[in-house]
Length: 413
Image 1 (spheres, rainbow, N blue to C red):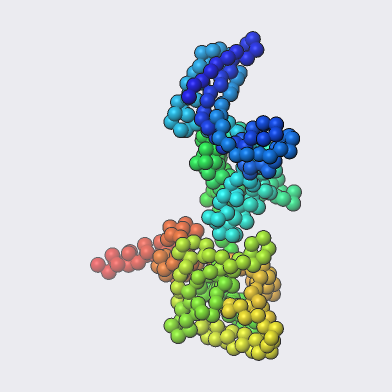
Image 2: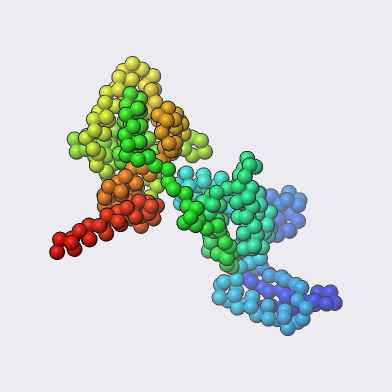
């Protein structure tokens, strides 16, 4: 590998360094060469001739050095990086092209469908409109911070206001992973997102999870006792299951005799369409116990579903799921959330989303003294630390109770 320095004009110098071979395509008609940086071209965009794959020697060229000495120092730095295999070949690929043509297709098979859909949405709606035209290798921490500031001020797609801090941090997470992979794949030398500053969630402004008290939860369940999906509302409230986990529950996952159910899959919306997916975390595959009242509600639900099946006969679609529509088809997750919202509004209780039943369960369990490890296992969290972090607002009460109990022991001595 050799570097060559030459004068550019009368006032500057440039270097040319051989950085090794790379995949390319060469036109058999006009002889033009095209580097394979993204999707290979089907034909020559200049003359339409046939392209053949080849290995070509590649050169790095850079000018603008005021003196030969400065240019030589840059050459030495490039040669050292090439020899150490840390040199990133120059490329004009844009942020948009890298995200859509290279990164998202590459990571699709490693992500849950819902996660991939979320990554795609964040990239298309929030990252690409502001940074997509920049060359990937010219992406700077300053440009990234400017993106975060814009999203906080006016980042909503509808154009009315900015995104929440947590939403901007999700954008940050996607961009950080994409650039991290770009470094691993030789597209970047360093990850510019490492030096960016995503907005921080302060303790003062941390959003309290919307929950119901035990009295409010009991009032809701009493008000919907005659609802067709009462067994679903009761199950969510008494187990903290995620919406998709409950909707993906099959009859074969229920053991009525032992009073247990096993969570193996989730029915989730992907681009507006319901789809079976793996549990959210590795610990998401779990078996949890059910209380007697919830088991009784499920038995009533069995009878109701059997009656609906007998009345529909040939029109019944046997999906094998516990909670279905009146025709046996899986319920759409968004429709279930809307049904819960309508029912909760009718009760005049403080409004919470369907996911609030999960938060309510966890809050009540921890506040009543249930071991956090048990609560974490039933929720399917990846770690106990995550459970304690998410529901830390419940712990001060338990901490005070612990202090009082120790004090009572000392008084007795």
